[in-house]
Amino acid sequence: MTGVVISALPVPPPTMRDARPAPAWPGDAGGTAVDMAITDEVQRISAPVRRWARVQKQEYTQGEPRPLGADLGAMSVYVGLVGAAATAIRVSGRELPTRIPIGDAVLLTVGTFRLARRIAKDPVTAPLRAPFVSYQGTSGEAEVAEEVREHGGVKHAVGELVTCPFCLAQWVGTGFVLGYVTAPRATRLAALTMTMVAGSDVLQFVYDAIQNGALKPADGA
Image (spheres, rainbow, N blue to C red):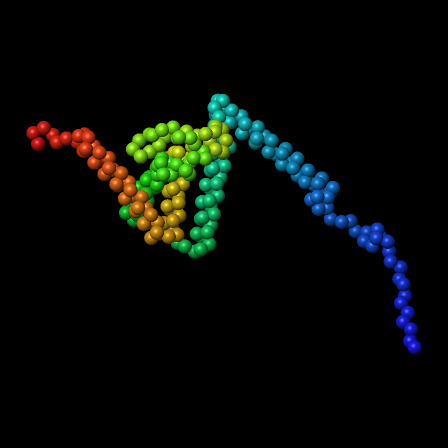
């Protein structure tokens, strides 16, 4: 009968199995020290910029609660969205138009005007503005007057943006241009719709003027 002999080899203690130091993860003491050093360096470098920004804000606002930081954030969002859209268009291989027909330019311009004003002043779009502004009354035919709820913060900046048709025109116009590049037919139809609404508004005012007797034939006519 053959016996099996198993030799018992000595097993090193756990502390001697691997003498190599473990890597310093962010949660370890070494990683924490490195993170703190990087944070301190970033704060040291950015401190003059923060001081300069505070001085500029104080000199510009003169004590008024202006949302300069939030406005800077809105500009960053706009630039980021435009950059992302431009990158997507480039990756897709779409060609930018070398020229835009005058008819399309008129459609996009009038459509931008009408849609920006619809978003900023129309009672129907008030639910979109309600989280940032409060109702103050009417300001014209089928338009409302609103005031920002909070001053000096993000809600202030967004409230001013969504109640200002001149400010919104930048965003709306950019949207129309990007749409014109990626889906020109659908964008033309959308711009045509808003242009027709703008034309209808003009006719409504003309009709009201006639009804009120503002337009009278000249004497002897």
